[in-house]
Length: 311
Image (cartoon, rainbow, N blue to C red):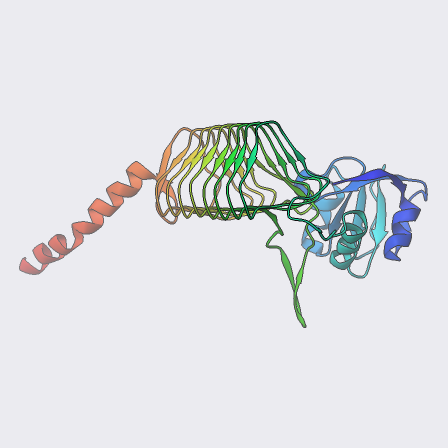
């Protein structure tokens, strides 16, 4: 998430009332999560296990809960609670703005696009040409939809990320200030949920087709010409490369990559990154040919035991 204009390190420190290490005029351009940070971004870290990863990332401003040696060319924001202060910055730069109408005055809707009754189109939404948005679809703020897109009834684009910190008083949600981006020629079935990025974008690539009742988590990027069948659940921060097929009731863990043209059979649990161009099945996931061989061998166990008893 980039800020509307550059800020200084001192200005940011004043917003969250914390100390800083570095030149007070050090330029701050935005804020992002670790997997999408760029120079000029703030990244937060609140556990020693991840200090090195954050300090050595592309981010040049690190919001951290301990004063450590500052890498050359970077700056630190020293906070007693980086999670809390990251939320403060999201609320400041991307505050929730209530809508006063079903279709916001700030929404941009292209030529020949059809919006069926009872839809909600939020602030700063862009929808391209020749789209069909069926009834009871909710499209949250800042979503970008390309041309020739169909979204079926009851789907929700742009809900908050499922991202919480466990505190003694209960779960504290990391605020979502990112977007959903739907490229050209995408079809989205009924009752799908596509969550917005925390600070970045959740993206569905050109020509991909989603069946009904699919969950896509925050900051996930789905490539071009993917086929995703019903009741699939894709966790946050996944990369699904071009022309991947996910059959019904596939589930993934977060942060994994599914390689180009992979074929994942129904009810598989994708517990790790997998290479493209192969077929997979089962939990834990294996290449389908090997997994099916194993299952065939398992079926022979009663017969083998019987033979052993007879000897």
